[in-house]
Figure 1 (cartoon, rainbow, N blue to C red):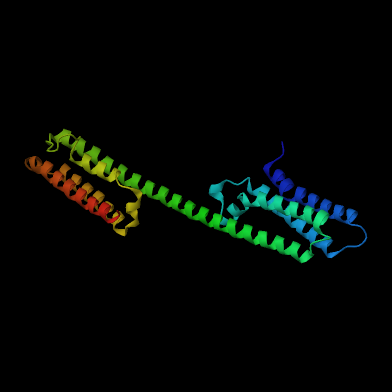
Figure 2 (cartoon, rainbow, N blue to C red):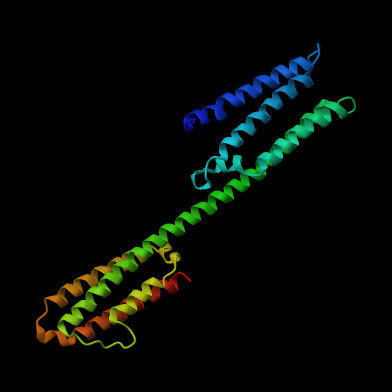
Length: 251
């Protein structure tokens, strides 16, 4: 079986070169003795269209997430439309209109729809890149949120084990433990909260403070463990209030 590099070489170099050389030979074979300005313009424009076509074919092999805006412009539907319009314009003018319409109007028409196509495709490519950047940003924020949710969940499990080991009573009904409310509150955050610079600092502070609190709980004397639930509940309530403030600021 042919290797990927050989296939790329064939479709990227050999086939385009063969088609362009064949086009030049056909133009000279069918162009007659006199080589007018129309002949040379049509030859150059045809080669340009063929080059765009083969670049377009190569761009189809790339996935959209690997593309820059320029590549996406080449892959957009503007390219097939432009190629079809260009070929049709060459044939219609050369066969039907060359004796009635001045060549300058023919060239002007090609320039106008080329510029129009480039502008439209450029706007499309720009919007694509903006949407792509927004998607990547949302995905990154989602991963950050998952990190803090998982971290809090691990601390919640740790506190549950400590509570069972030392018979620490729970003062919050309806939840596994007091820290469950905090885990659920972090999980309910939307990715846009990370637009605020203080969000990461605040969540880091909550995780660090909770870790230090649980370290202290594990080493606390038995006599002090009766008041631990109240301390954990106070910490949870305060942290939830701080998260609510962040949510309000991003509404």
